[in-house]
Image 1: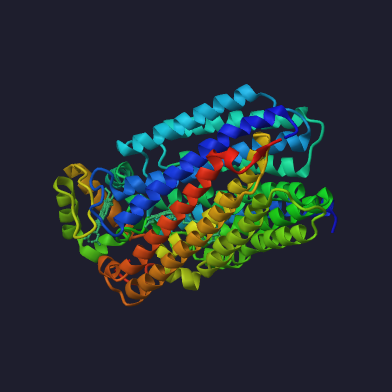
Image 2: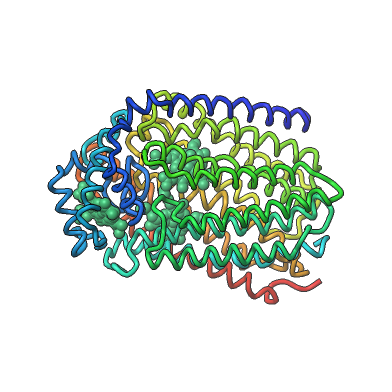
Length: 140
Length: 440
Ligand code: HEM
Ligand code: HEM
Ligand SMILES: [Fe+2]
């Protein structure tokens, strides 16, 4: 192979695989697919607010969410199913006033009622996403 | 050094190394918090220290890339840097942006997505810095006498770095869509356009160090980056198995990402073959060590450790565990930290107008850091295996399972300590050049 044929293969291949990637991307994010897998109609104002609170405190740099993020604290994509809404609420309330946790602790975030409602709704919506059956069990 | 303006790369390498030291310091802090959770808590909680650890990583690597490019491009295209003043302006802008961001993190001023925690204002500053840099490099290339494949591929890699960073501004309310495009920054960088940058540096180093024929080296370069693009673009699918995206990604992602090892195999073959065929004895042996080393360790970290968990049948169990952290460390260090250190090793003595000298300390630091990082990765692999078994197979609660992994976290911290010693040896050697090298 010469240098210029290697170069042409590189360019041609990159174009072809970019096009395939864009087609797959379109298929993944077209409305019917998103509708079916993520229920965007359930993204209420509260869910939006919950996502904002989630980002404001960088929860992702301790926890994972659908397996992405940090590995220092439990997975939270399915936390409502694991702990139930009431327990999650209690955890977030105690975290708001004194920090929360056994050995590894979660900082105190001064969460308001609105923040906590938002986070709970956000977790509830996350829990309904079709993740192809991940995680393997409820412990995340 | 053939062109006076290449020296503008010097402050870039210095900034990169100092920020590298900061990165490792914060790595040690979070490594310690895994064992003593109350360490520095709540003043510097884990999430804040972690975002500093990984943001300093990105910033120092990009400093290294830019410095290396300012050294490389003039020599490749045969012409001075278009504007050294501009290069210094965006150097300080970038450094200020980076330092302000990190100090801001300590005061809880940050965004909320991993690796992209920079507030929007800092993100905009980064875009401006990269645009100034791209402009300066492009003008240097246009005004130069030659246009080599290495310089063009390098430039293409940087354009890709800038373009994919733009997805960092896209924050849709639907978390699934958010995650989808988050990977267009993170995956497209490390398994796409950054590999172009790495392969260009590798080709440059091998030509300079071994005296091999440019035509041959540049053919290899196109083959390597061809493999990168053919596998890495659709290989993004290995992140779309379980985040709410369609199941067809399990097929596409698996087949394509399984072959993502190919560019790393090619880089190893390239490096060994060229060094074996060398037409002269290299005078800078440390640079050869780093160059061959980066090919080998990136093959291990990205190629082997990446392959280990890239098939959906395995990733189903390992996704988001210490296995991921293990791979992330060895891959980032082997590929991007080491290629920057290889370029520094080659370019810095030249910018100082010095013979490389004995380089004993530098080569010692190479071995300490590489072996320590191997053991950090192995400790985390051990941690990951136990975690997967207890938590994913036996369904033990997360915090309970963590209790059984302490030993491995202790080992990780221990080897983090030896890594830090290696880094100190490196820095000592770097900042006291008169002790080992001699001036021309
Ligand atoms: C030498 C001492 C080091 C220690 C003790 C250390 C420790 C850590 C810890 C505790 C985490 C957080 C993992 C988690 O979320 O649970 C982390 C993340 C990370 N570190 Fe380090 N680190 C060190 C050096 C490095 C170096 C040299 C690099 C790269 C060149 C690096 C790259 C990373 C990356 C990429 C992540 C994010 C990993 C992921 O999200 O999977 N670290 N490190
Ligand atoms: C130099 C190149 C590479 C670097 C720097 C790198 C770095 C990383 C990092 C930092 C993560 C964690 C991201 C997060 O925080 O969630 C990650 C995840 C991952 N990487 Fe790589 N990687 C590289 C190459 C590869 C290759 C070649 C493969 C496959 C063959 C691969 C497979 C994976 C997989 C499957 C994950 C997801 C892990 C999970 O499910 O939790 N990587 N990589
Ligand atoms: Fe990836």
